[in-house]
Image 1: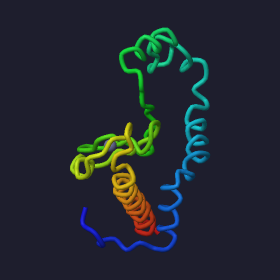
Image 2: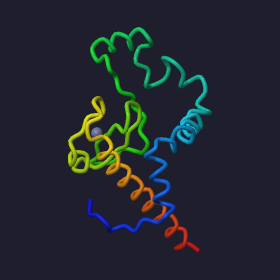
Image 3: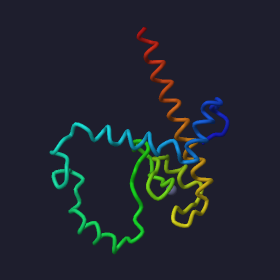
Image 4: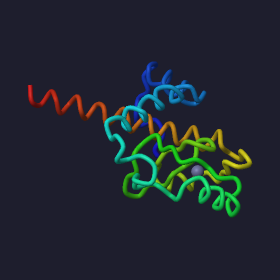
Length: 143
Ligand SMILES: [Zn+2]
């Protein structure tokens, strides 16, 4: 991603800083998750859930093959040409493949994680900001 194309506001920097310290999502994100699961009721529970993978037994079985399983909590939506990057063992961001490959890193060993996370968050916050701005511009167009 080209550097310095987008102007960062102080607010923007603050949010980025918070995200990097890993605090921004802990509560906000959990609330978001529980919100999105509300109202689905019994139909989505347990084995009726489309994501059901056979229950605890099956999960343990799979754990033997892949002992150190990483979680999969995406903080943004998948998009064409993106790859899931783990910012930690549980959560991650979809970022463009080229960006993801630009810094070799490993979430298991922590190798270059600081560096790649900075890049990932920078991309993510820039995109969020752009998206927000587009929404505002859209709304202006109708007024
Ligand atoms: Zn990654």
